[in-house]
Image (cartoon, rainbow, N blue to C red):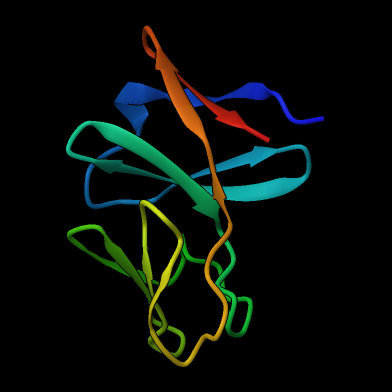
Length: 103
């Protein structure tokens, strides 16, 4: 059963960067898009590269620089190959200064 767990402080999640969080043994990538926080798996679905180590963020799209796969941050949808699968996304909520992720 999934539940919301504290992942980070809102002030630590900067726009244009990925903030890494580890919850329940999973690595999550946290994104700040205009003050709204989104969470995806940190692993690219193409060759399992870590997004927080190899990425370019353009608007609401993250590109894994290992091989160029592109994903919509808000939905995890595949925007550009070579990946064939979307990123897993996780619901988030902000309470006060804390960010919680449902995992």
